[in-house]
Length: 128
Image 1 (cartoon, one colour):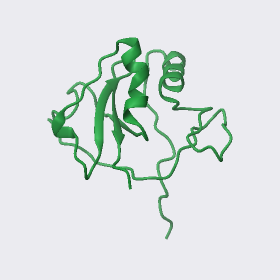
Image 2 (tube, one colour; image 1 turned 120 degrees about the vertical axis):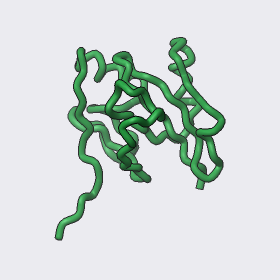
Image 3 (cartoon, one colour; image 1 turned 90 degrees about the vertical axis):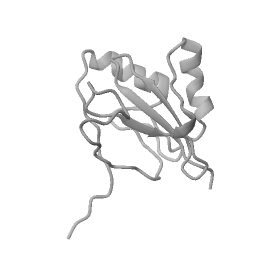
């Protein structure tokens, strides 16, 4: 029997796909042509990521963990939350943090939104 080895893509609708793709590449280094793994050269079609934990979890339909008008929230694993948030601070974008989200055993979290209002949770796992 074969086994699923990971998520091979994340596809979602956008009003302006080209502009949104450019925002993700420039602001977060995410998307085609980006590589989080220095040993893998960039490829225009894929985002090369590093191995690590991935939570796959349906939430109750009435959850208040993210906006009720959104069907999904992307969680991106980061190595330095403060550094990743710097361009958001410089642009004056809203950054949401809550003390109850952070836990030394789980890590630190922040929430931002892309230009089309999609929620993005940034997660810095605890250092090993």
